[in-house]
View 1 (tube, helix red, strand yellow):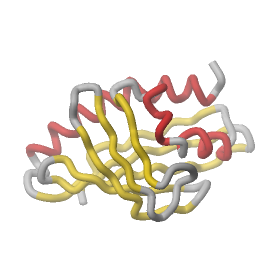
View 2 (cartoon, helix red, strand yellow):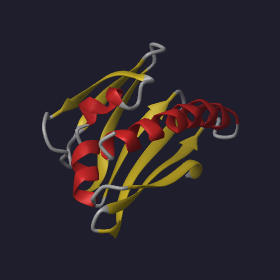
View 3 (tube, helix red, strand yellow):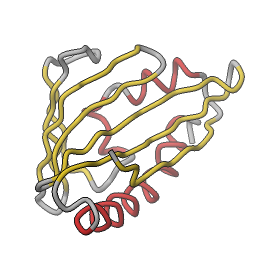
View 4 (cartoon, one colour):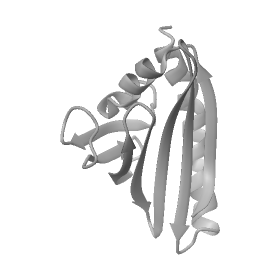
Length: 142
């Protein structure tokens, strides 16, 4: 696997608040405006068996399935982009009782990692860079 995207940022909110907010995946379009909608199954809290379908505003669809879950700390899901296998890691680390470090990491492997991977990283990275300030504002109650 090759790491294409690695974003880490701190939020003035507790880890529990950050986890609760981000684990409501269907609500992500409120801060990740490149996403039109997300369907998650089963509904409700994240589980080891959570699967979903993300619909982007540009018409692209991407499915994912949970591959690792440590409630309150981290989850990892996998999906695909053309011939690439993509792993999305979401990690939560308390800095203090009311401050959390969040990390989004995207790793890929598969045919075309060099060329398709760079294209994917450019597009997804730009979307993430626009979305993170919106997420921070939501988490900090602005």
